Image 1 (cartoon, rainbow, N blue to C red):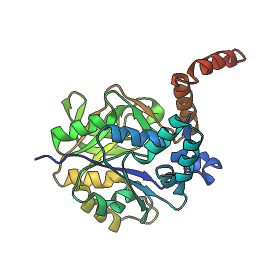
Image 2 (tube, helix red, strand yellow):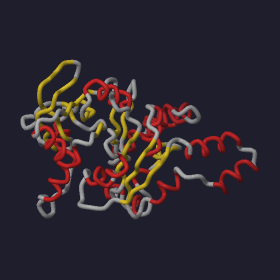
Image 3 (tube, helix red, strand yellow):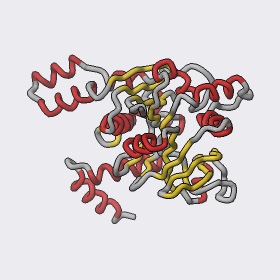
Image 4 (cartoon, rainbow, N blue to C red):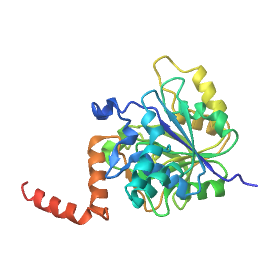
Length: 297
C-alpha cells in the first residue's frame, strides 16, 4: 500500500545576503507579501494539500519564524479585550495550521544538509520539500500536483517549470531523460545551472518543489564523506546517486504554474505588486495609485 504524504520540510537556514541590510536581523522567509510573510504562504499551501507535520530547518537568526507560528497569549488577550474578533481569529489560526518541528541546521553548507538534519524525524516516510523564500501559484496547487505524481510513480518527484530565457540557464537546475508524455520526464541526469541552452538537457527547470524519499539519504551521506573542501552539499548529488544506482526519479511539469522567486529584489517587488493589485482590501486603491504614479515616467 502506498504511503500517504503527510510531512513536509522547509529549509530556512540561509542568510538572505541579497537583501542585506534588511535581513541582518529579520529572516528573508519572514519578509512580507502585503500582510503575510512569504513562509506563511508556503505553509498554507502545504496544509491545504493535507500536510500535517512541517519540519523547518533554521539557523541561529531565525527565531522569529518559530515565534510567528507559535501562540502569543498576550496578543490574543489584547485582541479579545479590544473586541477585534477578526484579527484574533487570524492570529489563532496561524498557530493551529500544523504540527511544527524546528531543527537547527548542522553540517556542510548546501541545500541538502537540511534533508539529512531532518532524517530522524522523516524516517522512511516520503515528504514534500519546499523552499521558504519562494513559491508557486498553480491550479491545482503544486503541492497537490506533486503528491498526485508521487501516488502514480512511487518515486522521487521534481516539480518542473519551463524556463527558456537565456539568463534562466545560469540560475536553475534542468532535468533531462526520457520524455513519457504529459510533461513527465524519467530523469537520467539533472544539470545544475548549465549556463546556456546548449548545455542544458531540456527547458524544464527543476525549481517547483520536490517529493523526497528515503532512497536519497545514503547517497547524500556518501557525497558528504567525499565532498571536496569548499564545495556545497546539494540535493542533486543524492538524486543523481539514486539514478546512477538504478532508482527512478521523475520531473513533472507543473500545470498552470507561476513561479515567484522572492529571494531576489526585483522578483520580490514584482510579487508584492501582483499581490497588492489582487488584495481585497487595498487592490482597487493600489491600482489607482499605480496608474497615477506611472504617468510620471
